[in-house]
Amino acid sequence: MKAIAVTPSKRRVDLIDHPEPEPTGALQVKLRILDVGVCGTDREICAFDYGTPPVGSDVLVIGHESLGEAVEVGSEVTRVHPGDLVVPMVRRPCPHADCVACRAGRQDFCYTGDFRERGIKEAHGFMTEMVVDDEAYMNVVPRELRDVAVLVEPLTIAEKALEQIRQVQKRLPWACPEEMAKGEGHCHRALVLGAGPVGLLGAMALAVGGFSTFVYFREPEPNAKADLVKAIGGRYLSAADTAIEDLPKKIGNVDVVYEATGASRVSFDIMKVLGTNGVFVFTGVPGRKGPIDIDTDLIMRNLVLKNQVVFGTVNAGRATFEAAIHDLGVFMRRWPAAVRSLITGRFPVSAHRDLLLGAVTGIKNVLRFGA
Image (cartoon, rainbow, N blue to C red; front, side, top):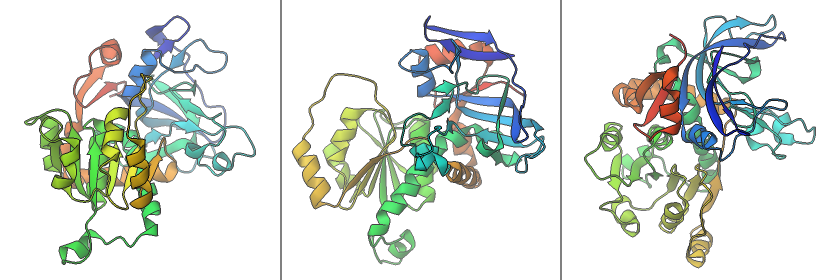
């Protein structure tokens, strides 16, 4: 079968013939892959910044944002049926008995670092025609989300962040937006850094979660991303005409910053304007660059005196995938045109080199493997 793979030892990116997998256990499911999203991680693996083939293999089949259709299920599978649309999870647990997170099915919080990630680390990914995996890592998607379901995996980043924000802010008396509408309490304000797919999906999740949502991006208006932000009831702020230090004047108290750029300098500069009781969430992984100068005294002072919290978040567990599937349905009911506009291109497998090695274009590009 066809598969897109990297050979790190030879620094090659190729469309290869790869053995078709077959189920070997009663709890396994075979998927025919339909769509695979192309993201920055895939491009970084193709630049050989990281990416580790499975043990015994010279190649790594890449791709982790996927949608498949179940074509075969094991005799003990109960949650997935032939014909179901499925989004597989990415991370697989480490083998260590003392890793509480992995043994509890929360390998996204793995303590040992010996997890595997499909398409990234020691496990083949989904840029191929067929995959086999255990039912435990399958998430069934309603048929009506077929056209946009490939967005589920990147949306899990925001869903996991929101889950943790809610847990953190239980320490506070947080008023809800309904109370604000009655003239009572304080409405939450969220600032999203970046207008790529992770940032825009995060903005949608925050808006549905009751936040007044602002998106900060370098590109001046007018542009398609600004139009999309406005379509979901958010406000677009451009770095071209709004300095970082002026953001609180336009936003008010910045309750949450959702970082989706991977740009460390901008992120730490934004941290200086995080509001009282604010939460700063890192989702991006910057490349290795030279050191930057930051005002550590100011950041530390604010963290202490303003009761701020900073955390990073990666990958996602089953509950987060289920939340993403649910919320993607909500997005489609509220803003169908905006959600569809996130996918700016659908391409045949033959276009893989342009998407993985060429200039970045659009918001989210998708490789089509199936009908």
